[in-house]
Image (cartoon, rainbow over all chains, first blue to last red; front, side):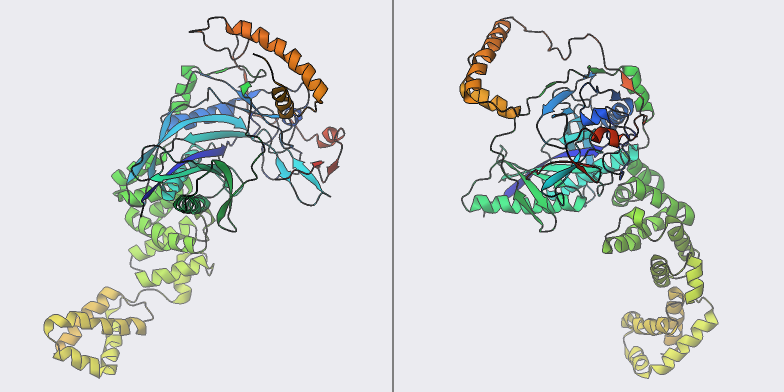
Length: 485
Length: 95
């Protein structure tokens, strides 16, 4: 059986969080009525001229600085010519030959806690197109140009990724960087981050790349993994059956969980790029770049290092908790509220992450706020409740049964019983009710008794409805049972 | 460099210009003369000369990120052949 290696490169389009468009003063706000945010420049009206948005330039440069990329002094806009109704000018203004951001590197963290560097070939500025709506217009297509002219930063990686997991980790790393920088809202559902995936396979050990397919329309972390998994399997089966992969554009269909060929155009694309005569070369002086560099916030990799060094978290915990700005902010509040970084990390990644996963929610959609979780963890730390009860309180908060942990602890009577007398009387009852087990305990070798005590602990905890302090129960049980031997 | 009939037809297709066969022959000759002139320019030694991105020796001015354009949909759509629910309607695009 031949062993195959997957080779993946990503082109990620990030919508920049400017107020106005890249070349016009029309608003970029999401969700407006169709064509109410499309001005003469966006519509390609004769004589309308583009003027470049300073914020789009600054955001692109900030990204470049964050990935340690070269920032060339001069960058140039080109026209990419093609006809489509949602592109009224007949060309997309982009940067083909002299992009604003040169070669850089992005560190990705993998599930096993290791890291890998993925090279970025370049990143360039360009404008988005409008939207075509194909349904319900008596055989016509409806065009909304609100999105036309929205600034995009296209980040092009080298083919450095070797698995779907690595590709997803790379996408997450970009998401973290752009949201930390605040240059994009990173909202994949609204299309603020979209991704084209180049995938090929080759026999392990072969130096040259196989023929690649480009998958378009991949707009979530999960879809990236699924689309690649499907495509890799398709290509390997094709080759093993004696076929050949053709270079083509494919579309990922999340409903059917497959990629399929887009109708092949009769003619290969010929975009006839040339420098845009309406825009002059963009020249960035060193002082401007230095100013942007000095204003960079703490980046994910720096935050990860700080979580490890200052808070004593493991590499894995620090990686997960710094993976997005939302996650880091949530964790920070839990930590500050309960006062224990390790416990905060355990709860955010354990109970909370599990619940979010089960319901497919992102952390910013969590029904339990960071403040609520912090207060809950504080009640575990001060011994008001035990670990078992804490899970019930968490569930209560998740289901909205109370506003605070204290409210739920009170309502459900989960306060931990630490009163020795109360625990002792429960133990006496259990011992009285379990003559057979007590006899077995007595007859057992002393070194086997440790295990046998579990049964009694379980019975006492049950009798207390989970509220007895487990350490006390253990201690007192052992004393009482051993006294019987 | 001379232009073949097929080259002219392809260029016309890319530019979405409808050209008859007679016209294509005519443009093949016309465009051919332009290419001859380009050929003359090709003879110049440009070794070590950076390609020119723009004839003006100036750099791009930037504008502040402010919304300065309001909604003028009604005005813009007055010259559109067909609109519905605020959308421009165009002949169906087959995906």
